[in-house]
Amino acid sequence: MASSRPNDRSAAVGFSLNPLDRASEKREDGEAIAALKASGGARFLALAGDVPVLKVRDGTYEPLFTSDEVRELGDPDMTIFLGMDAGGSGFFAAGLKQDAASAIGQREGLELVDLRSIAMRDLVPAAFLGELGCAKAMLDWHGRHGFCANCGRPSEARAAGWRRDCGSCNAQHFPRVDPVVIMVAVEGERCLLGRQSRFAPGMYSALAGFLEPGETVEDAVRREIREEAGVPCSRVVYLASQPWPFPSSLMIGCFAKAESEIIAIDRTELEDARWFSREEVSEMFAGTHPHGLMAPQPFAIAHHLLKAFVEEGGAVLDS
View 1 (tube, rainbow, N blue to C red):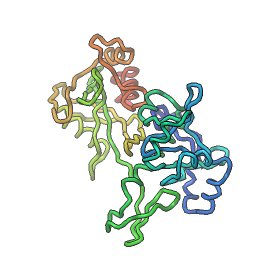
View 2 (cartoon, rainbow, N blue to C red):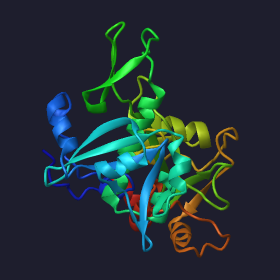
View 3 (tube, rainbow, N blue to C red):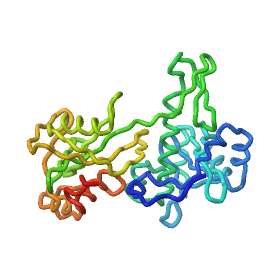
View 4 (cartoon, rainbow, N blue to C red):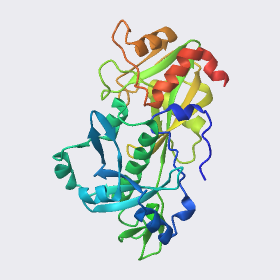
């Protein structure tokens, strides 16, 4: 059963709060899943392709649908059991056919809103945002893994959507999560931030990169900072993590102690990188930076890394 959530830093990050009891022991019990789905208390998160469907009324947004409401939207290609709420009702993700999107977009009281926009606009409570993130990641995985990676034959969804089985070679495939380190190098009371060309004008953020096979989180942090900005680092300290459903990563937020102030930018990775004082980062949060520079928004783990730096400075490395 789900336990009470400790007051850890990850709980404040976008997509991280998911209070459902995942009830993984029920996934192989087809009768139990069918009963939960048929119950009047069952609720569904509906996605057309990878875009959530929201009910809109008087300026408020509601992501939950009953089974009858989902059927009105169209027959789902895929239904995944997400878990149970505190009252024991089942929660499911309903993946609608891609061509359902145009019809849904024309219906009064419904709106298709991409998940990133939902987070940026704070359209739903944090718990629903985490559940939508899980639904999107799972449906995306099924969409990308319809064929067995072992023999190439079609695979089928099993375990209430949490596994795919190959009937030809009997291989079993499970949802993947790609670990990504996202980090801020700290030198005294300054931190190292960079920007990519795809960022909004004036936006600077933490550096980030995928872990490689046979690599620890600490080694990945040091490698990525040195590769992208040329700064060697020593001590690495973990802060928080964030499920990132674009399509399915786990962002592992860290600080690293910089051993040099000299920056050598890899222009294939970054457009720019520079050192920022605590005061500058505070101005970026407040929107008062003299050069109009900005920090990431609160739903991103980079925001929380920088917030911790503003509050604690170099002491973030003492955790």
